[in-house]
Amino acid sequence: MEIAYVRSEPAEALPPPVRESGIVGWLRQNLFSGVWNSLLTLSALYVLWVIVPPTIQFLFVDAVWSGSDREACLGPQVGACWAFVDARFSQYIYGRYPVDERWRVNIVFALLALSLVPIAIPRAPFKSANAIFLLVIFPVLSLILLSGGAFEIGVSWWIAIVLAFAVTELMVFLPALMGGGSYGERMRPAVVALVPFAVLTVIFVVLSIDFGLSEVETPLWGGLLVTLVVALCGIAASLPIGILLALGRRSKLPIVRMFSVAFIEFWRGVPLITILFMSSVMLPLFLPDDVTFDKLLRALIGVAMFASAYMAEVVRGGLQAMPKGQYEGADALGLGHWQKMRLVILPQALKHVIPGIVNTFIGLFKDTSLVLIVGLFDLLGMVKLSMVDPKWASPVTPATGYIFAAFVFWIFCFGMSRYSIFIEQRLDRSGR
Image 1 (cartoon, one colour):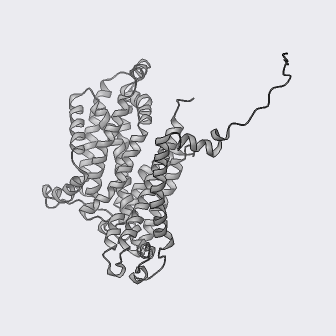
Image 2: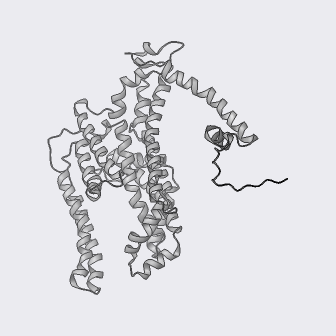
C-alpha cells in the first residue's frame, strides 16, 4: 500500500552540521583538513608552546621595570631590564641633541604627524594644500628647526641656479617659439618651467635668514631622529627619481635610455654599505680643499640614489604590465607623451606595483641602521652605544636593548605594510 502527500509549506531549514560550521568547522577546514596539515598544525603548536611562554616570562613576568643602575638587573631569575631602556629612552629618541633644544625636535615630530595623518586618510579635505606643506614647507621648517638655520649660501650656488634656469628656459623656449598655436599657449611651458626655480630661490632666501636659533651640528643628532630623517628623505626622493629613471629606461632616445640603464645598474650592483663608506670617506678626496659636505648630507644622497635605482625597476615592472591597448587608447585621444603618462599609464602602473613600492620603502627603513658605518648613530646605533656604559652592564642588558630597537622598527614597518594593504584594497576594481 503506497501513501503519498503534497507538502503545503516549505520544509524547515535545518542548521548546518556542527562539523562544518562555527569554530569546529573553521578548525577542520584550515588546520586539520588532512593528515599532513594536522601534523603541521600540531608541530606549530608545540613550537609556539616552547617559545611563547618563556618569552612572555622574560619580557614581562620576570622583567625589571625600575632601577637606577645594573644592580637592579642582576640575579639568576631576572628578565628584561626595562629600567635600562627607561634610563636611556631620551638618547634613543634624540641622540646627543642638546637637552634645552629638544623642543625643536618635538615640534618637527608633531608637524610630521599632523601632516601625514590627513594625507593618509583618503577622504580628508585640502589634499593639495596638505601635500604642498608636506613636500615643500615641512622640509624647510624641519631643516631650520633641527639645525638652527642661518645658512651661508655661497655665490657658487646662486650661479648654479641661474645657469640651470637659463639652460632650462632656453630648452623650453625655443621649441615653444617654433611651435604652433597662440602666443600664450606657446609661452606656457616656459612659464611653468620658471616655477621650480622661483620656489628654490625662495627656499634659499628663507634658509639664509637668522631666526635666532642656536646651531646644532648634525654629529649631535641621533636615535630615532636620524632614523626618520634618513628614511623619510630616502623615501621622498626615491619615488619621483625612480619614476623618471623607469621612464628613461623605456625611452626611445638612446642617450636618455643609456644614462638610465647605466645609473640603475651601477647603483643596484653596489651594496649600500659600500655606497655609504664611499660617500663618507672617498668622496672628500675628490673634492677641492675648500669644498665640504656634511656627513649626514652625504649619507642622505647615497641612500636616495641607492633606493631610486631599486624603485626604478619596481616602477618599470608596472609599466611593462600595462596592456598595449592603454597606450593606443591614450594616443587615440590625442594626448601627448607626458599627458599620456601622467593621466593614463602611471596611475595604473603604480597601482599594480603598490606591494613592490612599499616593500622597497620597508627595506629602506630597515637599512637606515647601516649609517652607523659612517659614524651616524641612528636608533640601533644609540642602543649599541648605550650598552658600553658600565653603570648598566648586566647579562640581560644587550638583549633588552635589541628587543626594544626591534620593536620600534617593527611598529613602523608593520604600519607601512598594513596601510599599503588598505590602499591596495581600496584601489582594487576587479570586483566592481
